[in-house]
Image (cartoon, rainbow, N blue to C red; front, side, top):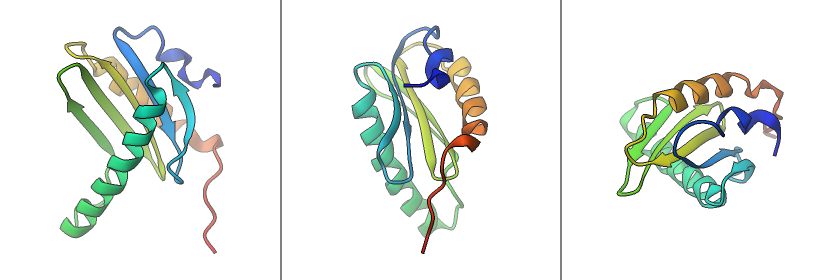
Length: 115
């Protein structure tokens, strides 16, 4: 893992974080639940992209949901998705702002080439 996720570590209630590439594989993970979060973010991205396409709504840029135990927020940057899971009841505003900033910094990652 690179220093990219270091800024997420001090946020209250962080359970896991993941950066997922266009192929659905995790690029970076944080926490024991990072693998699971990465897999589910990739699956959600595919489903939400399909819904948005059918509705003519454009691309998904932000995702947030709350479950019984966690709050998940994620942002997209091109083909990448970056998300964090925090303990439910934790204020997610700082995480949302940090994710938005990190998404803008993803310019150093290789972009997929289409033949």
